[in-house]
Length: 632
Image (spheres, rainbow, N blue to C red):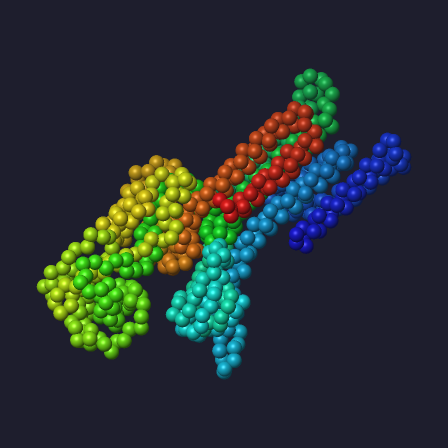
């Protein structure tokens, strides 16, 4: 509880204590006649707890009138409570203000709890960067560090800027970014992103971005700007309150004036001004739209805060609302459903031992930085002696030829084999096939496959359970590879060998074929996915390894690249929207019922207090449930 909340709580306690004392002093059995029988003294004494608890509301109401913004909840509370006091209903007037402040305290606490979730994320902002100047470490502002500078990160410190480890090994805590507690090991040559906490060793990092363009800055910008994108439900409530408050104020005025005049002028009866004015004041208290105005934005805010704690960044409540209606999810393949990391998955049709064939292939490819070459060298797993390799020739789009220990080795695709007139054998398995020929004779082939992400299959099952009816994969990869991946994962539709423009066209077709209320989400990670992410109803980007363009174009960013988080994001959005509609129906339903009872004179000020403050407290407590997303 912050300082402001403690002050409000203290005022509530003091007001309750004073009200109880005054009720005792003015009671018929044990009250003091000097207090109970003297109207002026009673009024003065009751005004003390009234101003203690309500001075800030009165001040806001006066400020609103002066600024020509009359019709708000502060004005309603001020008119209703002052009217009740002028009618001699002192306890009821104070109680209305008292319970309103209790409701405001609940709301303040709920917002604070949501903000703390966001603040936990904001803690990833680094305060400084260590630079080695004159042989000593000096703390500088991260904004002052240029690209290519070497910074030092010590145990317990945050990595301030994205970069590549030049020296050192360490364990990184990435939970603030990804929502996952599993630490990550890094060593020389690894890429690291800002916002992670160094838990063990000293790292020297060469920066690859300026601070303003680094991961941590992008994340903070996304979260800070999320409030600018409002959902339709929020916009509805804002417009509703704008027209609703003046209408109920004029209705209350009509309730106070018209029935007495009708009684007097048409029927010649006593107008009973006091009774009708009391009904009008009760009507005003009941009509206060606090429950809707406060709880709806709070529900979205809590949902976004809870999602961010799980490593799911939502750029606005409108995207949360759209995600809840998603029935089509379209995936990119490489880097989204697969790891984008090629590994040797088989060696076939070889006469040499597997290890020997792999050794010749790795040595021949040892001077290349192509992903295929890297995967061969990684599979070989030993130090490569490049002195054994001579006469290296890289043939673009074909492969490599080289002499390894005097043997002419050709490593590449079927085009290279055809170029060298070597009879080769096709592979029956799905993946990238690397053919090898030695001294002009076919020696076999090595199969290299892009591995599926660990939770990819589980993610598809989770999406089905979450109510997603169609899963589609779009990829530029070959059809046999795409079909195999789709079959393994259980994806219903697959389109392969697509250019970026083809992906946009395909998404356009899917958007036109679905029902109006069904929404389509696209999940991607590469720069070529940016146009599709923008075109979909909601774009979801893989944040950890994804390109800046994809993250910029997306509406939702998954910080740990785990496709399983997509289903979790959908469940969070649906829970949030469900809470929003629960609050709308509950608040409006109770309001209408109590307004009718108030107008008929059945409801008194105490029922009005429940209809206003009670409903607000219940709606706020319900909104807080949107924060609980851990086990969704």
